[in-house]
Picture 1 (cartoon, rainbow, N blue to C red):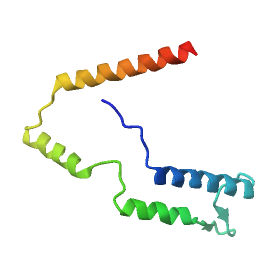
Picture 2 (picture 1 turned 90 degrees about the vertical axis):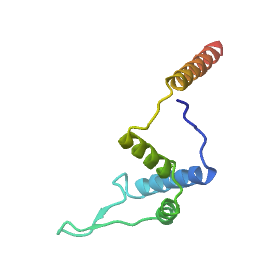
Picture 3 (picture 1 turned 30 degrees about the vertical axis):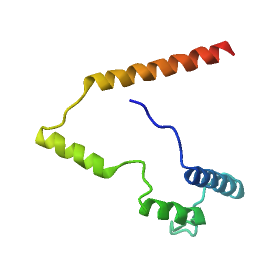
Length: 111
């Protein structure tokens, strides 16, 4: 099975922004985290950045790595007993992945 390692540039920039925000918050709080105790009663005050709303809007817009319709069709095929598995295709994918890994390994050993 081949896993697509490409990423959406918008998602990567959101991840980078989240990391910078977390680093800034850790530096500002002396590494104590984003939550601060507000009193002796144990109340906590949590502040979310603008990045949180951007991530939420992406999630609600269906920006997902999983094709839920395809997953449901596979579930239904399993329930119905109609799912067919092509073992030759699976074997070809495993061999292709092994070849890629061996090529990468031999290239890195040659440097």
